[in-house]
Length: 444
Ligand code: GLU
View 1: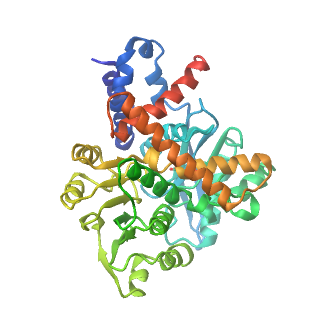
View 2: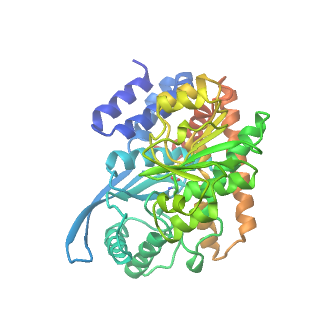
View 3: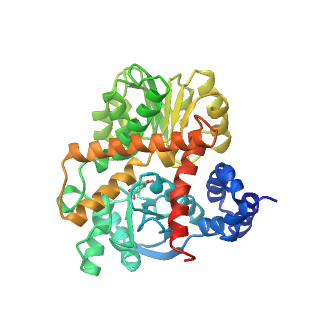
């Protein structure tokens, strides 16, 4: 059995019932086969893959909190400090009822390679809780965040582990988490990113994942003789990534006709009104039915369905495994030319292979959604300097980072004979830097 297969088998055996983690490991290691097989004995002797798939540290803790009726609840908190070869652990916190250790490990594993691709000095980590922020009052959210941070604060710091947001964790939650960290540790330091501008946040961080996705898509299309202008674009999700992906896509001349949340989806024949979407989602924290009620050109549909709409470009920006093989077949039959992931692992392995086999340009999330964490690293840099850069300065750096990511990924794919396979390119380019750093630091 080859070394890659041995390690995949070991991961499945040692981490039972962690399907998403198995999926992420398989996807990465399959891509690395060409690199590993060139020098299999050396990689195996140094147990590089075993060290890569085992987190450096894995924390699980109890989070008790009291609701507005005086009822006590207990949720589970997680932080997986996966790999610090390149820099402090960096990665978001996800608050969602589906969260379990397998989800956090898949996200943390992806984060290692994504963070490596940014070219900045950040290692990989991820955390979160099965807490559901939906329908909770501001006081309940604060109570939960304070309890969560009371435990987490023992393990993080500006130079050790710097969490940020992910699904269910936005500016409000980061504020409560930061306040509690400062209160307990007495440190005003850049321990979290995604902070508000009034206490050390970075301009452009809110927009960064969505804008970065479009900078990546723009570069990918240009290198293939295409352009965003005039293209019909289908987006899933209606959270931070989707909103700013829609905004930038429109600025670049594309027409975005859909978005979705966990209950249903919108088809807007006139193109999504991003200001209305922001008001509904960011300010009023309402469902998409409220958007449809206020917009004549919008149709609301229950359930799942954005991938049935004919489009040139599809941008999955909701959550893992939201785009499966049937969706991929529909998109290809409808003539899609590019698919790029705004969420983490939104496309199943089968769907990804179907796109690649059918000549669709496919931007994997660890490359195409890296703009969020890259801008987090720029926030860390500003915090260390005790300065704040302008919107234009950060936006330009973000754009340059995303263009560089595309070209590094493209070059890695070409070097190994997999031209236009950006999945393989991203995994190889991300892996090479991590392995260099790991080897340089000895057996640790
Ligand atoms: N949660 C985001 C991601 O998946 C951002 C993480 C960060 O900014 O640290 O990359």
